[in-house]
Image (cartoon, rainbow, N blue to C red; front, side, top):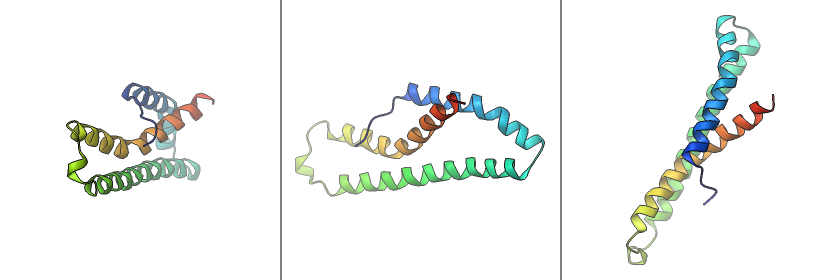
Length: 107
């Protein structure tokens, strides 16, 4: 399992990314150009890829959980499993939004 992403960190990264990208997005919508259309398509594809990666990671985590014998579980295993499933599903999107925020802050 990789690094856990704090909801606060992801929220701040999301706000930073939106603050940097919304003016550019608005400009591309108001005066369309081939470059702007490609940028908007890239934004959409980026979200779709992060979603697909999250779903594949979630399925892998569910398979690991399904093949673990029930007699090896302790009292708190269900809560840990739920947290692992949630992290697996959201980690790709969290990594992407934090990388975008870091990149856009440098501009």
